[in-house]
Image 1: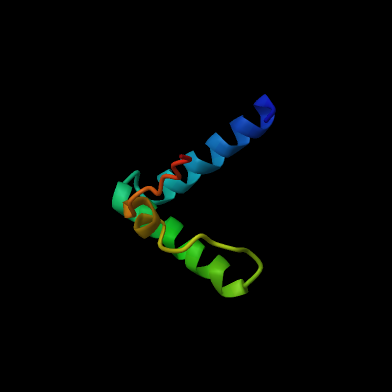
Image 2: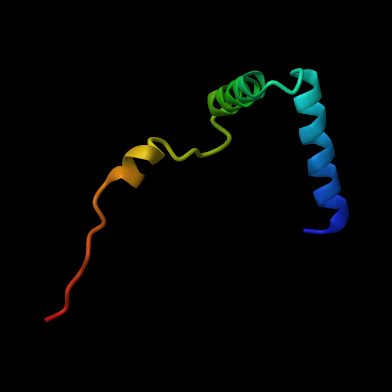
Length: 64
């Protein structure tokens, strides 16, 4: 990513935070709402239940 792109991402993130009084819970809820709206469009694929995937025991393949 170019410096411009990184600066733009930071600017937008700061703007979102400021609009939500820099309150972590409000910012998180804002992003959850955006995620919900994007899911409803069916234009994007989302990984569901990632915590379940992380909690699963790793499988190992032992070659004799």
